Image (cartoon, rainbow, N blue to C red; front, side):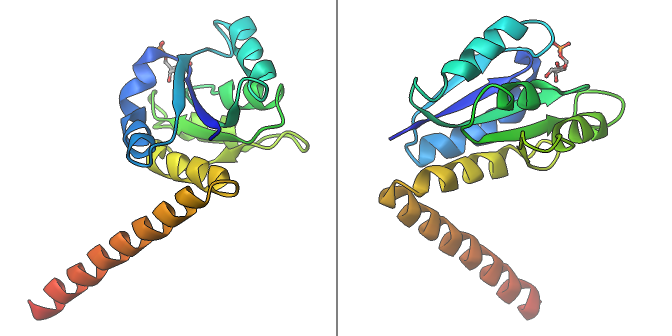
Length: 161
Ligand code: RP5
């Protein structure tokens, strides 16, 4: 199975990625975690991205806050899918990172999830890998059923008062 790369711009972003890590573990998806900064370690970020496909990665999750160029910088150097997580790390509440991550120029896509949207980033990464992994497709279906069950139970509870 291909790996998911989780890259964050700073170790200070790590707590915001725990949900993604938990989900990848639960789905038994192999992953690697790195700290590379588009601004502070641009050469290392580039090397990771340039070699990602040949190193067995199926997609990259890139999380960064503030003037968040990490996801775009990684996407510029690879044609495997890059999922961007804008991190709330400043007085602007993550809007700075959201706009920096989502507003990519044509030709270099970044699939951007919501601010601090680590869960959806992991699920989207698994959905991408599931195109070639039937076991993951089945686990995703099971997950959706469990989630639907929770909402239906909540509906029953609320309706009964
Ligand atoms: C971004 O700046 C990082 O992704 C982080 O969200 C933010 C602050 O980084 P530190 O100053 O905590 O290293 O590059």
